[in-house]
Length: 345
Image 1 (cartoon, helix red, strand yellow):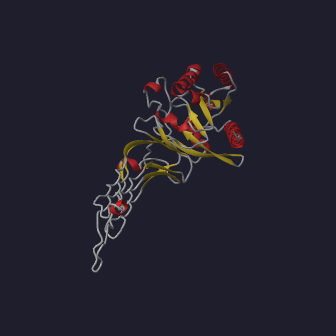
Image 2: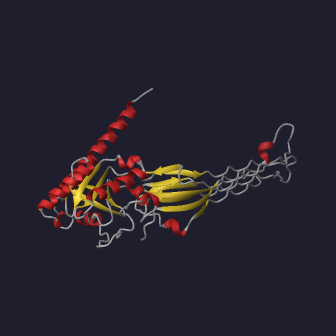
Image 3: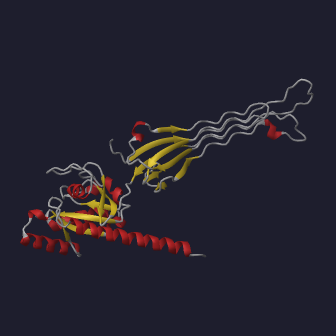
């Protein structure tokens, strides 16, 4: 199954059915009067977050979703049938954007969440509604209300606890393969990862989800390489794991390149909790490890962990550090929710 995280969709709700102009005509009834029924309501367009989906590939093959119109009213006070609704089923984590790709209509973050995107038109009144004491035989009825037509964008942001960051060939896919059952493509050339991968990682009997995105290069915010299109998948993460290639001759420049791209994409993303780790230490001797770690600590201004996805050295310590950051983030969100719930005007 191909991965697709952005889709353009055209939707239209159903129009309401028109009201009916009709009069009661039965044998032996001298004054029948109006009996035109109302039109049915048009179908609405909804979006619903469902479990079991992790891509928007279904919307590549169908982009138009039109709800049914309501049926017109009929004589003998019969109301027209309502039009059927249409439900767009999307993965959890999908954002619904307006046509400008900036205005957020809905953020589908929970399974079962349901939002109305286009309301169906109301049915028109039949002539029975217009009967008055001075107008016993009205010959007018309302037309149905027109449906709503709009263009929307669906953008998927994966739900993960940890996001992997780094230059191409920093060892992100190797780390994911070494710590989970995910099997991302691994090779000795840049940009082996062309779309995000998810892996479930476990440490000390606790599991969490790690997202691996394609590597960033300098100028990604301007469209170089694969650009920063996939950074949206780590926006929801509790913590970022920044992997730096320990065998690189430009460790400081590598670190500053990623930080610069994060700041160019969104300041909030650069301010997220982050664990910095020196990767590929299996290819370094003791002196080289000390020198590389000192250089990276000076560049980052904080502690640096060391690991190797190949020899599995330091993996457990890194996973425990990530788990601690995830727990802190959950406690922080819980405290904020309790504070907002307890506040009263």
